Image (cartoon, rainbow, N blue to C red; front, side, top):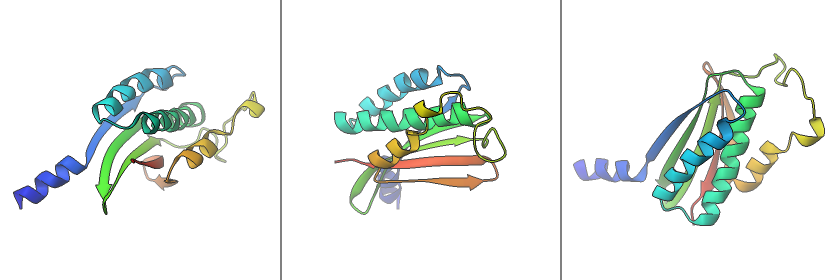
Amino acid sequence: MTAQLDAVVREAVEHVFPLPHIPEAVSVVRRRVRTVLADWNLAPDLAEDALLVISELITNAVVHALPPAALRLSRVGADGRSALRVEVTDAGPVAGDGRPAVEPYADEHGRGLGIVTALSAECGTRVHAGGITRWAELLAA
């Protein structure tokens, strides 16, 4: 039984980063995450894709949602595949209809979740009592 538990612990590694509700959150967290991804020995292409997905999800939480917010990274393995799971949880949208209260430069925004979808093997949104979690899984080679 202990050998099975040890295998599970090695397969799932997790890091949680509280997100300051400021525009600089993206760059601050990206630097910290880059170190974690390097420690996990991810392929450089996967690490860059992950950083872009993380940046988009954090930006979404900081610009369009209420605090508090947190980023959760986990390295998971199941059914012979390895994946990086990215989750950003926030307290929900700023406006009651799910849109930001003001969209000053709409033509420069709105592409983030499309980027996340394009780079992820799977992604989605989960609404729960604590807010909203947007997640993405990127497959390791």
